[in-house]
Amino acid sequence: MFSSGEVGNPSSDDPAPARTDDPSPARLLPWRATATENPRIRVSDTYDTIQSQELQTLRRIFALIGMYPVGYFDLAVAALPMHATSFRPVDKRSLQKTPFRVLTTILRLELLRSDAAQNLALSLLKRRQISIDELLRLLDVAGKQRNQLTQSQAEKFIAKGLRSFSWQCPAVANHSQYSLLNLEHPILADISCFRSAHINHLTPRTLDMNEAQSTVLEAGMAVKSRIEGPPPRKCPILWRQTSFLALEEKIRSPSRNDHIEERRTAVTPTGQRGTSDAANPRTVDEIMSETFQQYPDDWSELWRQGLVYCEYQCTGKAMTTPPLGESQISSLILEHLIADGVVEAIPITYEDFLLFSAAGIFQLNLQVNSKSSRAAVGGGSDKGKSSADLECFERALRCRIFDSDKLYVQVQKQSLESCAKEPALRAQVLW
Figure (cartoon, rainbow, N blue to C red):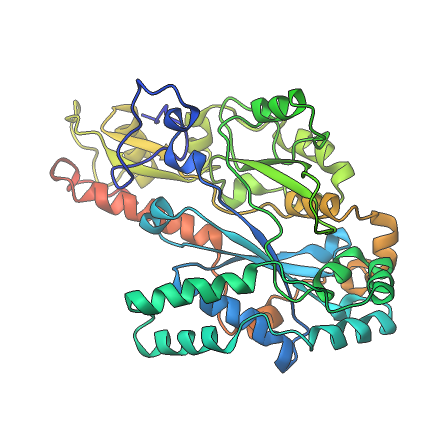
């Protein structure tokens, strides 16, 4: 059978269930639904020694708190001279304890057409150091201690690490320099003119994006006209997100939008086919509508066609029919056990980002005009070939990037192996 609960509900490893007699909204939602999950930061990277140090330092900071690079995104297809990865936990238990991710975008100066803008940006970036010497020393100490710190060292690490993500004044550029870079491309000014890899925003999570959108509108706030991601469904999948105009602040920043997200079921490569082709947000609704027009909206059918990832658990129910013979293929064995209620299939929560949705949010944040931005961004995107450069990204990062699909497959396979160890199922081959 398939779980009827919300995707992402707490498991036995999570805090105690909420009290049903407490009417506060926080008590009525699962822990993961109330967590503020994914901030976004931007760093520079021109693949030279100086600028690659920013990315490497961030990688070391995140690794110390159990977050690793997952997925590669080429944002140049949306007229953004950047590529990105998401730092997050990679195993089930860590995600249950700390379900956070940081989408980290890297500036690609080589994609800009203007030599003057490239040279100015590079000269500004060489003036900054996002991490102080004491933090770098603590990272070296942790490396010698099997990636661990003592209590007192950890307290210092947190204090020093926060500085790398905090807003620091004044800007390194003057007004004329900022204007020149902003005219070339808003993202160029946002990254090059400031002293730190500041966090742009935090994203709270909701279980009902349509309700959240309506609530924001009713509050009189300026909200994005469309919700990024798949249309509403009985069996929600992937990731939906909306954004609204942030409150006025003393600090003027190009990114003045806050965001809300809804995370649902992870989809297999077969299920994702066609959802990564929408580089221009104006075509997203059409593409999503076409993609999901004949997409099953039934959990059993989604599972049967191999469109979603599921985690499997034994229910404790005894088998009512004799075990199938070894000649039966594994998918039929598993389908038999699920239909019989012996094994439960629980959809796995989607932990990552959709390229077209991320690009749409960035364009909104920066108020990017797609036509003028494409005139500023060169590279492969306008030459009929891909501008993606995973190899150089990993070289700057000095580590390999995890494939998110392989992580979901691993969780799914481990759950099947766990079921196979149950006494009633030891005679069955589930995979």
